[in-house]
Image 1 (cartoon, rainbow, N blue to C red):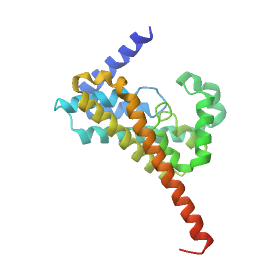
Image 2: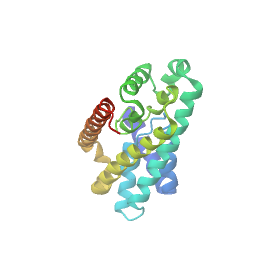
Image 3: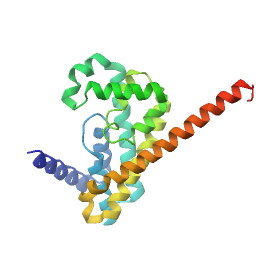
Image 4: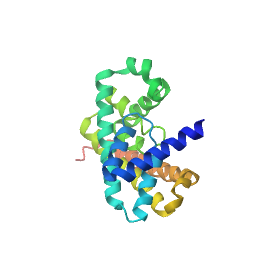
Length: 211
């Protein structure tokens, strides 16, 4: 049953992108970032396969997907800002958004601040939902948009490149996705180390009055 549903989703996504091209990628990635669990792990690798066939451009695919993520994330951010926490706890289960998702993201926001927008875009399972709690927390919108776009560009570039390299075997991407997750984790660790270093440097400068 689950396998049939998954295959139906794949068929729909591939048909949609094949028919509409870049607008199709953009639309699906808007939905993917608006807490509707349409996996980018299908959208972007298949688009990468179309790049391999010469039907689409590598950079335009990445831009279409990333700006789709940005628009979807802004919609979700404002939903969090306007709807708030109690309603999503009550009804979030209908879009596969649990209270545990909310608590996890809120804790990350408490520790990392606005930069969770960037880190969240690189975490499978978190990226779809990260914008809603940031809306609830009233994160800085400009920083939220900037970090979301940068994170989306990186993630979509990795997925598209994977589809490009796999070619017609793009559906076997799931075999290689753990390696992509490792790359994402390494990038996140590097970013956190850099962030801690900058914070410590700022604190030292303040202590000694260095500007």
